[in-house]
Length: 92
Image (tube, rainbow, N blue to C red; front, side, top):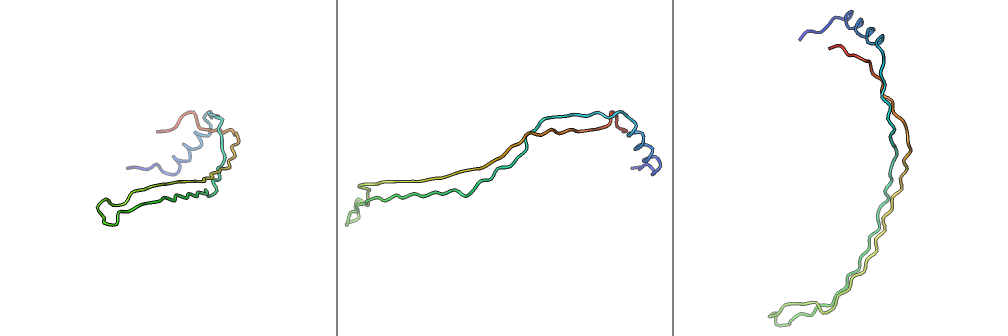
């Protein structure tokens, strides 16, 4: 692999500065989101009846379940414009 000497690199850089510059502009959204911890609570009582001999095992006679869940997020997005400038041609 051969690298150009510094004078060639400097000449190439100056030439690239003299070439017309192209630009590309796009609209984008930038922002953030903050997720606080969630609150989750569940109560699940149930009534089981077990066979004292162990022949039939246990089974549920009554059951109930209650729950509470809270989840929130805060975010902010703002529009902005991004411009990319680059030379018309590159040296290869």
